[in-house]
Image (tube, rainbow, N blue to C red; front, side):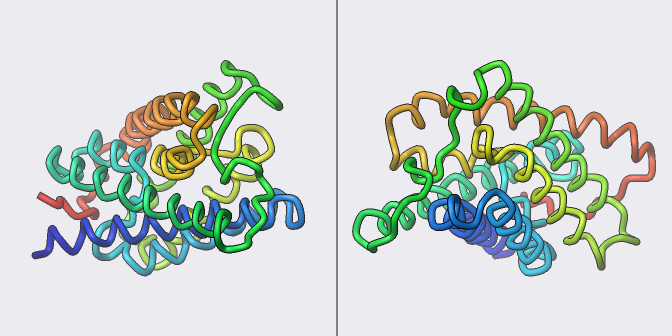
Length: 232
């Protein structure tokens, strides 16, 4: 029963993160600008840490789950369950955004359902570097902060700020992924270039998450505590 609740929390959390975060880009990318989008992602992440964090760890991101897996704080089976839930939640969110823009009268200010992409303001090599570094930063903050029990009461703040900072840098360049699920949901319904370029926004955020796990191990040393749920 606990496993089902954790997986359900990851499904719902990822759905809300993608719907609200990407939705802010779809509805207000031009009128609100980069800051509005970055704050939307940061605020919803902060809220999710406190809402579902005690239950599932509030990964809501396959790259975070990979970092937690490599840190040996979740089992392989638990990670697979989280990944399935995260991708499913993002897919539902993508469908809801598609519904809003196609039949809900919402004008898509991104012209691409908020999907990630490169070619106009950044090339493939730049995107690879950007996504690896930004995801590394975000996952590193998640792993280090969540491993220190003395920071538990304020953990949502640095995690939310780290995600917002990543978006402040990346939104105008490639839309900022740092989360393969976030990229998958909109791309499935946008199709075209978004779907063709999706592999970049899956591969390199996952690489950033793996590198963050190695760095977190060095930073934390032996002072690591099992604070995330095993979801076995």
